[in-house]
Image (tube, rainbow, N blue to C red; front, side, top):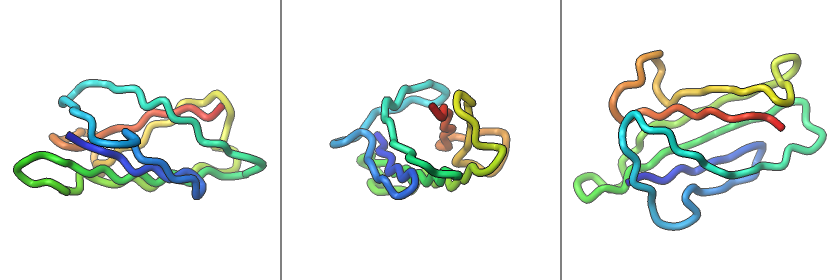
Amino acid sequence: DISLDIDVNGTQRRWPSSGTFSANEKNTYSIRERFPIVDSNSISLVVRGTEHDDHNAGDDVGSVRYTISGADLRRGRMYEVRAAPSDACESGCYILRFRVD
């Protein structure tokens, strides 16, 4: 069971908003959160994952820090960032895919 703390340009949310989410490896889940980006030339995304199982509750499952700015910031574009430093997403890592509207 996990939770994610999400910060986009200083707006903070927790997913799920209460409790935890039971995630299985190699599955995709939708996080239907919208963050207002008003008159900004950049987006700063910070996500911290926490595992809440019975064995090691409170384990850090990785953090993501990602900034998009300038020509890289385009409406309608899909972005992907990983909580693991390698292309191979080892057990326990997660991948975030999001679109800028």
